[in-house]
Image (cartoon, rainbow, N blue to C red):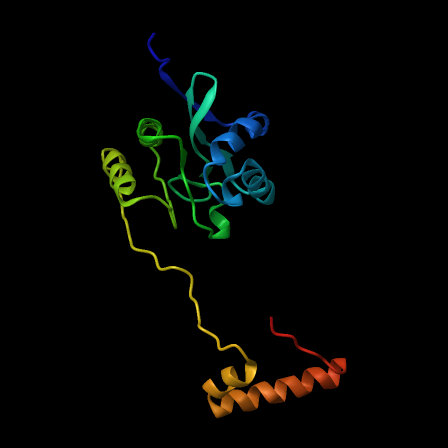
Length: 194
């Protein structure tokens, strides 16, 4: 018995996207992040009501099972119009959803077939998958991959006194002056460090 061929669907209709919730979340379950679930992308779409965008979600189906997805919109505010992640405006890491190497290959081939510029900021994927993506898209467009830095982090001591000792005397004086102003305007304030 031969396996059914993979099929591609491009979703342009919000009602069709809404109907995908269950299948989407089954595919997204393998990623340990709420930022790939159907509700996240639905909320991102709702937040962009009135903007010059059009749904362009690329799906790969394996029979009746959703096997890969690229949650994209066409940003028509730019010339030329470009494909971007539905949630691109929030700046969170972006993931293409796919079950395996075969469905990933079909997904990126479908992305290239859209023949539109695609902007992925903070794309989360392995180096080998990034190389495959760049190679496939290069046949139709320029690909620029820049290393991205993780979010800024600062080590803080366990107690505020130790932290305060690390900052300059002028910053400490500014902090004390602002603390007094807050207490004057709002009354006694308690702080708690967990």
